[in-house]
Every structure is written in C-alpha cells, then in structure tokens.
Image 1 (cartoon, rainbow, N blue to C red):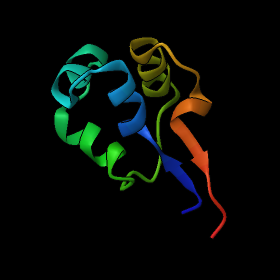
Image 2: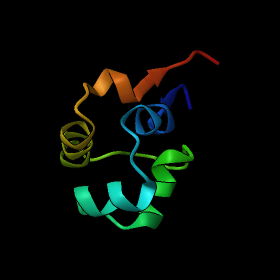
Image 3: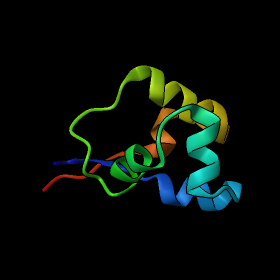
Length: 68
C-alpha cells in the first residue's frame, strides 16, 4: 500500500511510549501497534485527529505517500 503511517518518528520526537500514546488517544495498544506496523487498512479521522492532538503535529507528519 503506498500510504504509510509513520508514527515511530513522531513518537520519538515527542518522547512518548506506545502505551502512553494509546492511553492518551483512547485506543488499545494492540490497535496502535497495527497502525505503527502499517498493517491497518484504514484509519478513522477521529483517531487521526486524536493522534495529531496528542503529538502536536499535522496529518502529513504521520501519513506518508510512497509510490511502489
């Protein structure tokens, strides 16, 4: 899939753990792991909004388009 979720970089910049981020945005650590490992087929806008709020970033800082 050409859309990649690049959470690791932003999480490292913000110095936040997966468990802390999952709790902060209200999803399970397992679902956050699915996002981080690019296994998700879709992302809800509400989840993306919470990620951006928690990480103080824009959607483009998390989502990356890469051609195959």
